[in-house]
Image (cartoon, helix red, strand yellow):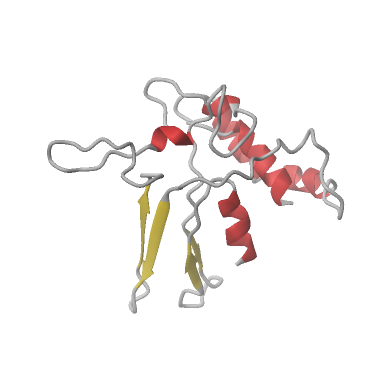
Length: 165
């Protein structure tokens, strides 16, 4: 299921730069698409055409902290430094610049994928696709309280980590 879901993210990128991205995102959450994809789920591995191979190479990633207070307010703080000291560039005021450029898919080398994602190629003014997933699980309507507040990083491994928890 996760491999199928991650294969669909190959159509995602900056929606302000590519008009097909909002359509792809809408398709990902449509009932008809879910019904069609449900037929592909079984105990064997999905076909290689559906799942681009992912690298098992581990590298520094972005991080996040989620804090839930006693009043049920939740704050998510996300850092896109991606590695110690980010890009290695510090502004004159002492601010570390991030290395979010690593979140783009590059033609010759990608951080988390062995195949580049065409909708996430770097272009001037474009925002890279991010797999930061601050997640808040709340009870159904009419009930109060928060059940769970968690986050994960490491690119496409984040989704499986969240689902397993």
